[in-house]
Figure 1 (spheres, rainbow, N blue to C red):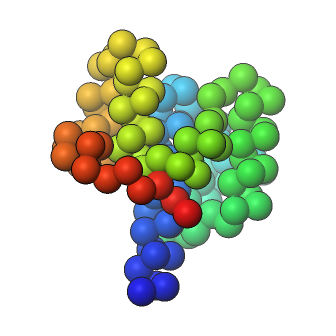
Figure 2: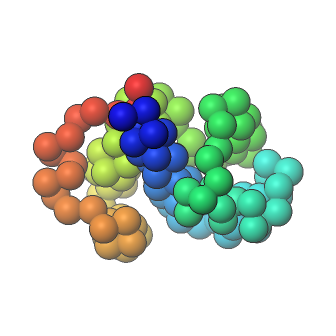
Figure 3: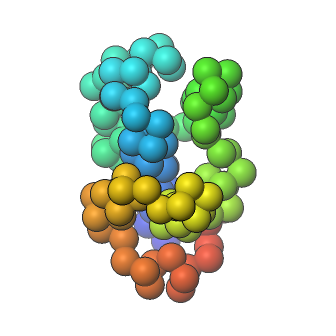
Length: 120
């Protein structure tokens, strides 16, 4: 059970990182540079092949928020990626990028409404 939770955590964080990067129109190089890593490392975080530790995630949130990019740590801790994307869509009148990200993450409407369990 613990392994499944860890895999789920890593996948959720990876999805949040993808949503964050694409929503803010950043490249993997931009994100990697901002946190002192290569774009390859950011890519591994985003794909979930390398797990981003909580301390690094908090550091990322501080770095991105200092540069005026939206990185909502509260949402990351309480919402699923599907719910977070839905929140962004609602706040920004569902721009085309919202629909692109839903397809990229293979989210369906059921995953938004049926699961209200975020990362614990």
